[in-house]
Length: 132
Image 1: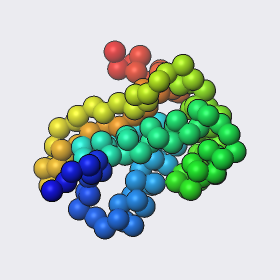
Image 2: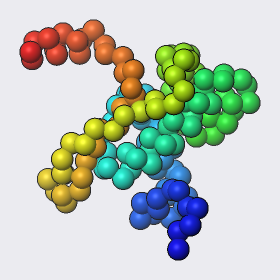
Image 3: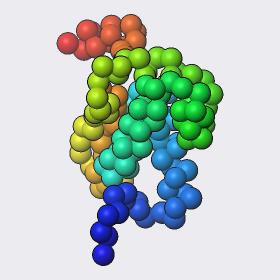
């Protein structure tokens, strides 16, 4: 029975699962949106939201806790200096999951995991205007 067990196992051992979630969160903060499978997106979103909450507090202790999970120092700096201030008034729900359909190779359900207030670069903005 799975009473009081929130996290999904994702078909991996615990060390591999934790390593994968660390990499997923680091990539999410670096690129602000990533495409992955549906189950990984759900777990990765929970993981990333906890780190954003740490960054909102901004203390040295919280920075060290987040540094244990975010592997790149530049991404950690971006998390605390750029991403966390965007969500200062927000009480949660920092990520969004958009279902994309199934992957062609193995028919796995894909999802787009992104930050809610994702910044659009000026180059991407021009590309979007051209598409419309």
